[in-house]
Image (cartoon, helix red, strand yellow):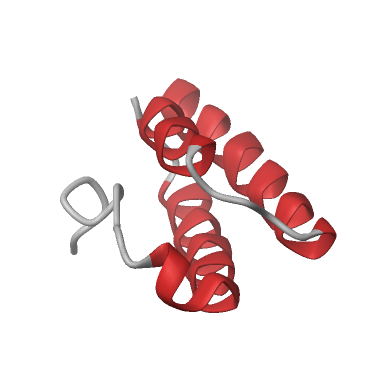
Length: 71
């Protein structure tokens, strides 16, 4: 569920190498979260996602995880 939302969001973006690395980390964390739903994984995913979003600037305006990961 989370991984699918991230993949859909990332598919429309042009990423630099460092952003691709962050995107792959996000996808791996999202897959792990989808399978196990650990809160520690959710925290790491959110942190990595926000770092990726900041690196994208205006390109990363959409937040596909907002509803899923709200506290």
